Length: 227
Image (tube, rainbow, N blue to C red):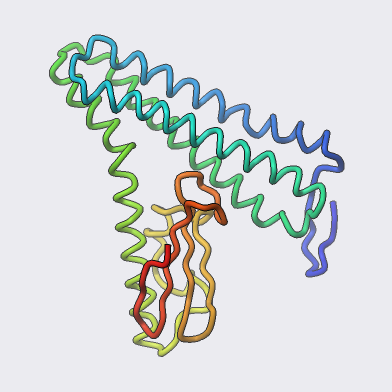
């Protein structure tokens, strides 16, 4: 344990060896869930002739593996960072662990849906349901995030128009449902000045501060995409 300059108590690994041990424990369930999802994605397309469904299954496996690699690299660096600077890394590390838990939940939900479709005996129905499940994960999820970000930006701009300033924090706007969709660990709101804010949303690697973040800036009640 360490007490930070701002008074926060923070627990951290006492050595790099301990950090790597904690990292391996943290990714254990994650790896099991990932393997289960990839395996059932392979099984569910056996006997399916529709090329689009097969391609989406292949794309899903590639996308999940890429996301897994990025998440694990960032998580390992974060645990090692805690050893060097526990106060500086603690908040970011906590958000990262929350993101890993969200990804784990998504994998479990996707696996359950695909396993249910394995039992479907009528091929035409099976192909349609599998295609819908894969499509929803690969494409519709990104669309849903984009819509939620747009709605959140509108709420922040409306707050400005009513109060002639942006809120000190994102909790000041009644956007719990949107934050639940996006994930609080993937959002970073910063009030630059009363008339300006920056909102950062973690991309597919679920990690704030990386190259695939989406950034919005609001000035005088008007929000635009920066990145």
